[in-house]
Amino acid sequence: VQVGAASRSFQDLSSEDADTNYIRGEGRLDIGSSSSLTASLGLANEVEPRTDPDSVITLTPIEYEVTTASLLGRHRFNRYQVTGEIGRTEWDFDDAFQDFR
Image (cartoon, rainbow, N blue to C red):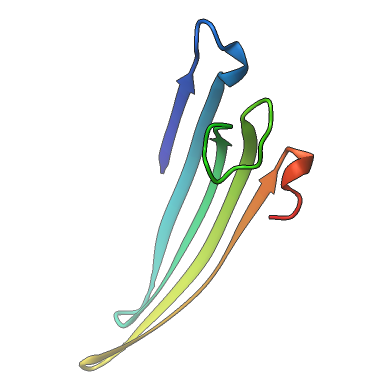
């Protein structure tokens, strides 16, 4: 499990203040001696500064949430290994200007 947080604050520009955080977990289940399943889940609250040249022009930083999930399967056949993975990442922007993403 990984957990983290950061806070940016400005004395004169309080509209630029932002807090970010994340949590991520990963686990593996061994199925016999040749197979395994690995799952991971993550959630992060991020901020896109309004000064970012790629962001839409807004008066405040754009806050968004990133959710990730994946499942990985592996099986070994003698010297060869087969691996398959499926995953999903979802970005949820709180600002109405970001609905197109």
